[in-house]
Length: 200
Image 1: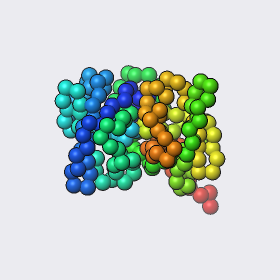
Image 2: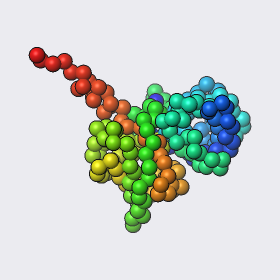
Image 3: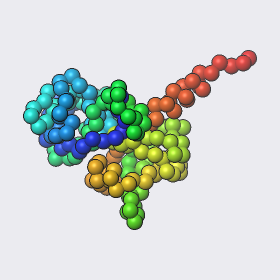
Image 4: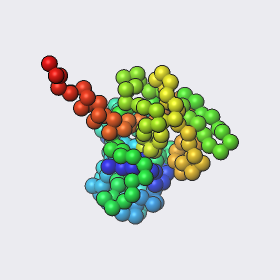
């Protein structure tokens, strides 16, 4: 489990085809301090398993299922990625509960620079509309954000300078894709309500 608070930006050093998937080598520094083979790590919001590591990088495998639900397959050598290690049991929860299980890929529709922040608008498939609420939580490329506006199948978020600087948001352009994970608590509420027994 993660919080959606990105710890650092890593760099995709190598992307090696492995059947219909890929093995990524990601350069990093901070997250390597206690990252071992077998550990989980969120890469652009997608929970992956470390299969190998070196002094300044780690390796993860992506399989067909992962590539079908995320934008990891379009990453290129040299691209920056958001990195977060799993939540520790004794840590403060500063973002929201993020599982690292990406639901779908969204698209950057607009980026607006304001006086001291940025405003970004994303589109997403209609079938997920019921999982978003105004001022609710959503993970975008693994970053915990608050929905500031909802309109049709788009939503917008306001991004403070710190988040803009410390994540890959600043690298995004209109038309780029992002990984979206909707709030797991909302999913459970929906499941319970849809399976509520009838009084008849």
